[in-house]
Image (cartoon, rainbow over all chains, first blue to last red):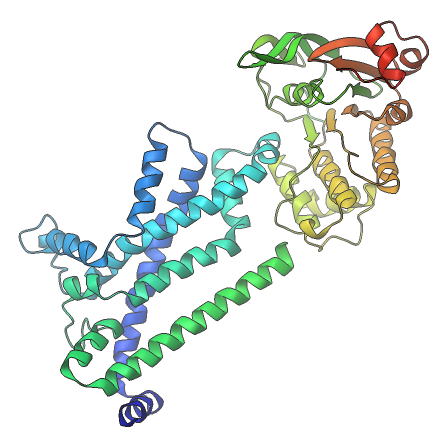
Length: 230
Length: 240
């Protein structure tokens, strides 16, 4: 009970340390989501429309990548960015940028795979009409992404959920440095192990609230879309 | 003003469409020229839909050749099709037509005027902002017609546009088809409703098992059919 009261106190009084962690977490996960969407949505849409040898194998690999363990991604990015790694000269290891990179790698396959499925289903419906209207490949992809936009919100949400909740990748490439690369999940893991449950529970409450608010917004967007676009 | 060249006449020379060993169309030769509507009739599986898709350029013949206005592989700039179950884009009624206008490269400045004109023509004025998927079956079919007409076609292909519609919705579609044909658009329409074939007029082409059995002016077809299949079809017998 005492822990819960302290946690609430931290949240309600706007504890600077707590909110710095929250802001960094959102910055990292939202940036990763934007990059992953820029990569994943066109990639998924193209994969839905373009037929080539080995396409089915690519889809299987993409689907498998959705379940890639974050620690494996963290390890791969760590090796890539470590001083002796191929991108070691960039000096990104243990920075927020490295965490964004890791989360982008983790989230892009989720968005691409869900986009591929959504766009492919819509393409089955639109194919005859768009072909008869002589719409070119670029126009087709743009049309399908636009008309599936409210469904794609779910894909983005799934991606954000994975990014915001994961700890394995960012703790490896970020290092959980206080005031620099400490996020909500890494802080919760650390504070729990230290026995400082107030901060851990406070961050847990904030994380939960953010996830609920974002889900509510996505739900609202879908309902709005159904009302206006059918 | 319509930009030349026209897609008419559409000329099919000994066109076959094969799927494995099955011939959906077998050696059809047909010239579709400007004029009154051509109504394709025949039982289910006769090849009506396949013929319309070939005429639209959506299916390439396995054998034979097809030309539009003397050109092979002509882009579908002057022809349009309404499918039996048209897909509505997930947009408003007006946005569906706007999309077709944009795809047909109609000048943007004319879009609003054309949308109003087309919606009035198909009797959907006032439903501009309604999501297309929320329209009734008959309204969706009329919107699909408006979308096809947005392409300002010389040739309008209609695949059983009134299948599964009630009599009032069917009449509305038929009235639009007659009005469009009267404006000089060549209409080729499939149906298995003989009454509708008579009402639409023009000429009849009877298909059976992927072959063109008989082609004649509508009055002649119904009063003096030349083939056994036509006589039996008109008499209401099942062609199998």
